[in-house]
Image (cartoon, rainbow, N blue to C red):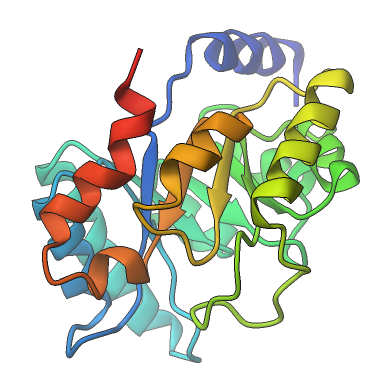
Length: 226
């Protein structure tokens, strides 16, 4: 990253306010990935992560990602791609989210440059420190509880884990936005906000709810309070 990009990145982080709720695409309740994103967006979600955990061809992934991206544009929502840095770059996504076993944040930044949003998954303070040091934009901290939408789960944190890690993160000088992830429901949102996170990411909570629009409101409410 050159000096101009580094200055741009620093200024963008100071100005950046991410939506408090991120939806992660998941096939469920008879819906495919695109339909799951459409449902979330119709309920007021303003940030979608395109994630597909079953092996598919590159052409299929690109076509599906473009469909979700178009929906996000129609709803004025952020669109990020899970894992696939090259796909994110090729289709001009807003950014990419990297798991603990994916490409390092610093390598993704070299490929994408300063204008792409880059998030990273964390489970420990060391993970959080690494994401910030490598030029990430936000941290996805989890899992909150066990979830079947994610393979190879890291140790579950629970509310106490978030309270401890957010306290340690402040002491360590971590300034990136932290979003909780992993089996979260609307009932969990107040405690997570109290623990210090800036937002949450969900999938099943919305897709499996009999009243998804109301569930979105419950998820967002603590983060909208003054």
